[in-house]
Image (cartoon, rainbow, N blue to C red; front, side):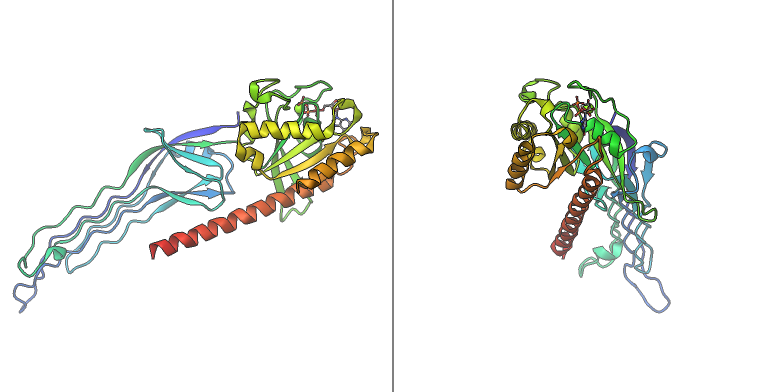
Length: 356
Ligand SMILES: Nc1nc2c(ncn2[C@@H]2O[C@H](COP(=O)(O)OP(=O)(O)OP(=O)(O)O)[C@@H](O)[C@H]2O)c(=O)[nH]1
Ligand SMILES: [Mg+2]
């Protein structure tokens, strides 16, 4: 459904062999060893790219080899290093070693680069083995082979925003209102049994399209972590979203108190994982057109504001607040993206500093 998976083979370049040579020149007797070192083999790296959202390109092309290092040559010439290759993969890809099952890397941020197979070191030429008592060495090393690995790439859900809330809160109705997705909508709980995805576009600047993906998942009820209702397992479909939109029905029709609904859902998120509970969240009061008692709405607003969370009021029937909600979601996603990017940048700087 939402999980895309491929197996690929990656082979880094072998190192070039070290050379065995002696300087031979007229009038230079015993010119000494002059075999150069072999070059390093190229690496194979995966790079998280926002331009891909499936693993399909690997399916058509499952083997990737980097160039080998050139052999060393006489006159102390070092062989050229093999070129490395960068393979783009969608952000959200998790890389496993297909043989051991070990997780090697988790791409969460655009531009992240991870070497999956290291090129072999070049062998040393005989010139390197010369010492004062060993002036005509014949030792020279072969290059080390480049790493070869079978990998399993797994891409989890691509959604940016996950809609959570009680059953009947209006999650599917909202997704049908803001995207082309047409999930089943009905006046009874647990209409949605499987997650739905919808692509939302904000504004209409064609040169600079602003889009994000929203996932609608089944509703949560008290005790979902103990298996009540549909349980909480489908929350894994929104594990990778950058933002949760928590929908709370504020109409009288729900027969429940909005503040306690809100707390129940937050409690269930926490039972799933602390990371889930700590995700950025926007709280959305739904069905404003059917809310007669506005003190209920105000109570929810005060509660949410007290927690420092953004709050919006909408009606999917009249369209009230929908555009503002789309924009607010987009802004929050952008903010998150920018902070993640600067995190990666500072991590890269730290890495470079550590190498120096
Ligand atoms: N008056 C009013 N009714 C709404 C609004 N949004 C949704 N509804 C109604 O609320 C009911 C439930 O809507 P859904 O979108 O199916 O709710 P859901 O959160 O997806 O529910 P589950 O899939 O069961 O978890 C439907 O009868 C909708 O027509 C709204 O803004 N105003
Ligand atoms: Mg639904």
